[in-house]
Image (cartoon, rainbow, N blue to C red):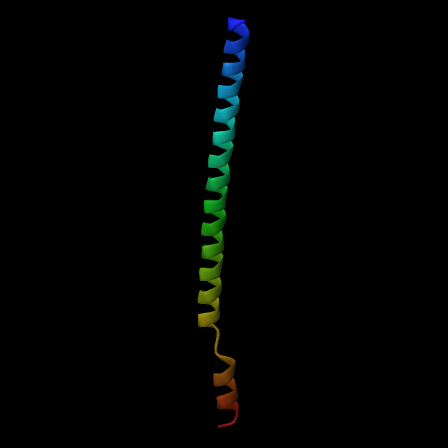
Length: 63
């Protein structure tokens, strides 16, 4: 009986550690996704800022 309880306890510890590691991996993946999205947005804003404004182009056309 003791062996069965010990085996169940060991299995429970393994399952809990595996579950915890999976949660850490998901959190890391979410952080990486957030950082990548932030970088993509930053790059898009830089590209937009570098492009001439369409209003300025229309003003120059009518002057």
